[in-house]
Image (cartoon, rainbow, N blue to C red; front, side, top):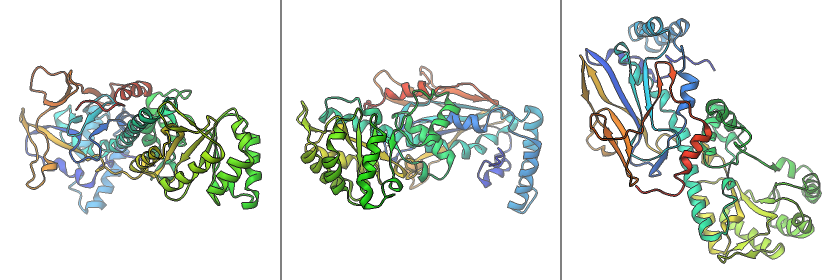
Length: 469
């Protein structure tokens, strides 16, 4: 789709150049995850991708100015709102590059809510209006950051349950698989949001997540993400109920080694588990050089999985680990990937624990619950102006809405510090004695920091165990 930096904004921002006080030379704004967020901490991720896709180099063109001017004329019904002079200034003086500085916390950093994550300011006093023109686009980092946050919380949950019920956490990197591609609103969303999931896990069926991580973060495809041979209902119903056994026979023949994931509820999951998996094909499955993953795919996850586990315990057998929890044979695991959200996974694992099952028996797939059932308010993201310069003097500004305590904004130019004890502080840059974690990422059309996916993975891994706040 054709994109024009001039129209990559909200309509009313095209008029704001007229509205700032006379003598305005600088606008400074910051981005944060405010109080009231679903999770107390946020993983910051996705800014570099937005910068590379939309801001690098000469992004203002003569054609773009003319197209935007015509659009604005029809949109507003007047010729007076469009800032042609301002955009032509950027084209003629800056060669179409954006005179803006963006500073941000390193991607993959996990920051408690109510702290600055990113700041934006113009570097040319003639472009004071440009800072908040970019708010709309830069705010899109909310989606990839939210998905990365959800996946982090899932990993923390798995760590807790594995610690309580399992002897090994070798399967941890694959316990949450991204099934979300078909459930998101766009290919671009699947890519960048799916990459946010891959910060924490190695399993995905969203190939665009791998493409995004490679394109924007230099990800190594040999270690980036993995998937397995798996069936869907179009396969399992191809020969009708009477042909289900023959299909499973064929699958076990075609895939004698490696992981094979089979959806078993096209007709009756209990019959499939008892008569086929635990009956006719039991010995072949247990003799495989690899894992057979049984996938119930409908009904209440806790109820259905409980029944299937009872059947597998009876027909396939299990062992009891050193912590006193039941473990299926190493050639068998269970996958649930239908309609899940994080809270449902917690309920699933808690119920399994009550029934005496170790968390190491399970893997999960999340689709819309991971990539789509989110919005900007999930983590309460917002970008607000906190300082402005007029006639050579900087002024701290903020909003303090009566009756809106959760929307009170910060004032001044801001930095972020993490103390030796793990506590976080957002401070004013005018204060001395602080070690600012914010780094310049973009300035005047150039990418200043080019982070790799592996660097970000290593950074975020430090936060898997809930830190001090």
